[in-house]
Image 1 (tube, rainbow over the protein chains, first blue to last red):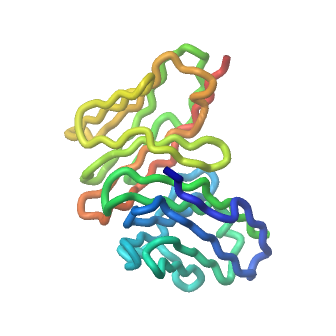
Image 2 (image 1 turned 180 degrees about the vertical axis):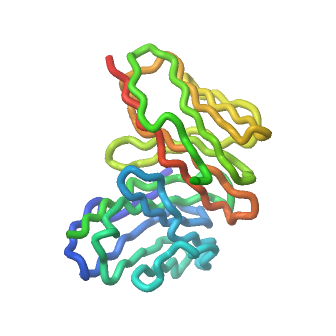
Length: 113
Length: 110
C-alpha cells in the first residue's frame, strides 16, 4: 500500500512570494489533515477535510493561507504572501475515518528568507 | 500551560538502557497517540490507546485515564531508537484532529 505522498520535499522562497504544497493521501482515506510544525515544536493543525468538505480550519490564517480538496482525494495548501514566520515543515496526514490512527507524509520543509 | 506536556524534553541514554518518556494532558480525550519522528521530518504512528497497555516489540505504552498520564517505555534501547517521540491526544468532541506535545528528543549512544 502506498503511503501519503507530498511534494515538494523542500522549498526556499523570499518573503511576500507565493508557494503551494501538494498532498496525495492513502487511497480510500476520507480524512485529510494539514499540519504546520515549527522547529522545536509539535505539529499544529491547520485544516482538516472530510472527503471534500472542511471539518476544522479554525487555526488556519485565512488572510494568507488557503487549502482545497476539490475531488475528495488529493489536496493543495497555498501561502500567499509568505512571511518569515511561515518557515516550518508542512505535514499532510490521512486517516480512513474521522477518528483513529493517522498516517503522515514525509513533509515539506519551507524556508522563507 | 500546554494541554499536552511531555517530559523530559531531551534524553540521552546508553545502548541497552531502559527508557521512559512521560506525557500528561489536561483535557478529556478519546484516545492518546505516541508518534516517532526521525530527522528529515517523517512521522510514524507507534501506538493509539484509550486504556491499559499496548506492546509492540521493545516498545510499551501505558495510559492511566484517571491520572491523565501516559508513558512510553523502550526496553533494551538501541542507537536506531534515536528520534523525537511525540505524544498527541484526540480531544473529546473534536473531529479527530490531534493536540500534540512538543516532543522528547531521544539520543541513544552506542
